[in-house]
Image 1 (cartoon, one colour):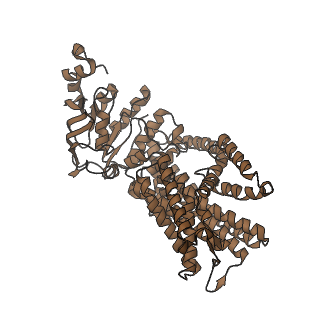
Image 2: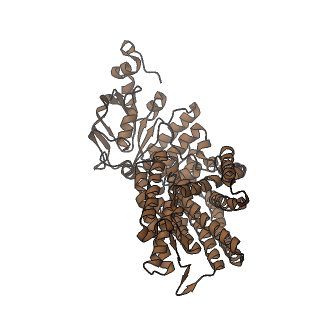
Image 3: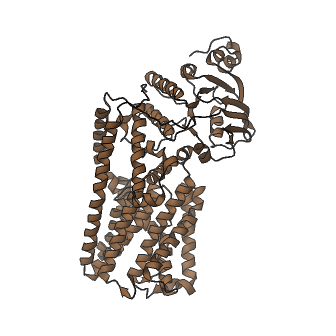
Length: 622
């Protein structure tokens, strides 16, 4: 990790030029997307054949639904598979609003979409505590409940008979023709795709994907995952609800079959087949599994078997989906090209963190008093006390099992302390959540790097800035100027941080593909992007070469020069003794020594803890 100057001298120009080129292409892209949407709608309006008209409507509605599901499962990583239940809520809600309440179509349709979004938020409550298979099981139960309500509340829903005679799309006594309905379905599908992709490319989208990759790391950066999950469930539910309402008014008949768990499984398979978390996967998957059964209708007895075999083959041979498998070579070529361009642009240029740390210096010490933490009958921390003075590097060392990582986890909010206090600038932190502690300025790295492996290095650094300058959800969803401006600013800041850490040429590489030393640099850079008051580094030199350790020391010394307060947990004594102003030593959850590096090296209690009582007279090797 080479030492780099933190002064801004001439570095900004090539970065601003590159960002300007991306902004230019971004301004051109919406025009092409709008042109493509208009062309699709025109084609849909021209199809007169009733059968193909019906098939087009059904395919377009499924595309919209799978786009909404992709936001929730693909981008946010929530294993909520009860999509048919939300779909049915949108369908029945819109149909009943017209049949029972006399609402005009636009009002009934959008009200039902909001109702579906509300149910999406309600169904997100289990996601606050559950994940993976557990959340999937809860979502199945939710789907079964919705299905049972539809079947047995026959006074309202028609029961097993369903609802018929549903008015078609229209307003003021005017109703769309069958071709107009097909064009509307295509427009909704295109709009759903556009909204999800716009959100994905925004700071909100980065935060959602980061949460999918590592929820703990997101919380450590001050990102409120409750807010993120609620937003993802709401937007996804609204899009799926729009699809359900459109289905009800396009087909003019609905039955409980649309809300079964089997229907949910088919929707999920569409997404998995096309490519979970990809841009075009929902479109491809919905088209294949909507049109495919129609092509196999002459083999009605065997079409489920054939489709099952095709799905099994695709999942085995292309587990990440068809789109991912087809585009992987192109992404690698682009990444190598971008890496080469970055190396050329950065060659010979001074690099900068600029004023990243401005305004975030600790005014007072971080005071830790009497912290206790027990695991069963074992006292991991037993009345630990230490004071970290502002603008200093405070080392925390001790033998394995001494309580160093436990103390870090307590300070950062990952563990709840059994007693004691930790105050920063007069605020008590131990009663706060991990998110609130990070927002107050205490940001940490992890012993094993917790990067967002599926995101690029640049996106990791952008995600670190989310909690302090996120645009509102609506502007991100619609791609408004505020969201674009924030994306531009976070991109520039990410490039400055990467340049100062010597990883500018790796910005477009997936974080999970970086070497361990570069991952360590990236994680420190991501923590700096959150503008911490106190930076906690948990064994940052682990796995680094001698040269990389030298670079780490130079970076830490530069951060101290900038006024950063650092708590450094490390086993590498050469790093600790070189950069720390003060060192605290733990053994069996208790402080046995504190002082300057020279004092710690000659302390008999420390020698005994590391070398054993019989070798207490031996020096600690560094």
